[in-house]
Amino acid sequence: MVLTDILDKSYEVYGAQFLHDGPLAYVRGIPSETGMDYRVQWYRPAADGIENAYNFETAPDSLAPPVKPLCTPENFSKGLSGNSRKLWAEILQPGLLKLDAKFTKPSHMGFEVQFRLRNYLFSLLLVGWPERDDRNVSREEETFGSASMRVDVHVKRLYEACGRNVQLTNKWMNRFYDRGWRGRPSNKMLERWGVSWVSAEELESKVQGIMRYLPRSGISCHNGRFGDADSLRGLLVDVEEFLKE
Image 1: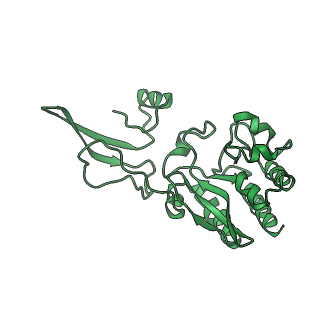
Image 2: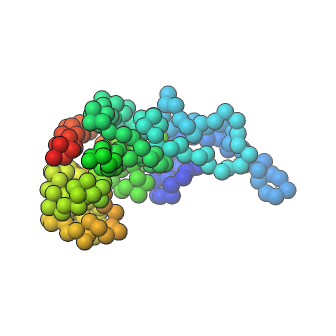
Image 3: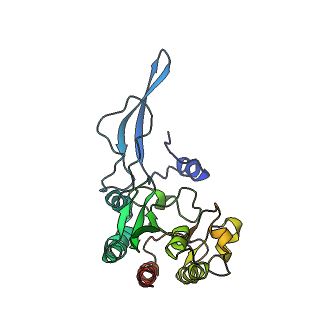
């Protein structure tokens, strides 16, 4: 039996070839008057030696999935792969704290990074695990304990921090583009944002104003590959200059 919370063809291939490199579970089924009574008897997390919030000592009464932990900075670090965790612990986290950043509003996929400007707090960055619909991230990089690191620039908040100055906002979108951050694929934001002029009407619309790290085709998020550390250092330089400006 293959247990998964994501439906895609990769699990069919993994199951057929007995490639069990992810989480494993032994499920016991006992016939009852209502059908089968399933209980999880044993569970192994995806990465050995990593504290996993999904682990449990006793079998649950049903197959209801465990509640996924909030992505606090502490849980976030535990969910990362070794190389991604090193980038977070040695570069991004201390760099953000040096800029007096606040980590707030944890969700199940990430948290906001706020900075104070003119006595107001602006969530300029979003940090978290990969989105489940990110096709550029491998299946292994989405698993708790081996996840890559997602760092997004929140352009809508950037626009507000610029005092709704369109010219200044486009200038910084161009800077982040040069560092490897891109707009969403929808509405051709991937090709336009940071390259051509983005109007105030678009910045004030309901479109999701996020720029994601996509330096080349097939690459998304930071997993410790060559160039990842330099891109994060460059991002910190840009954020520091933005705050001064």
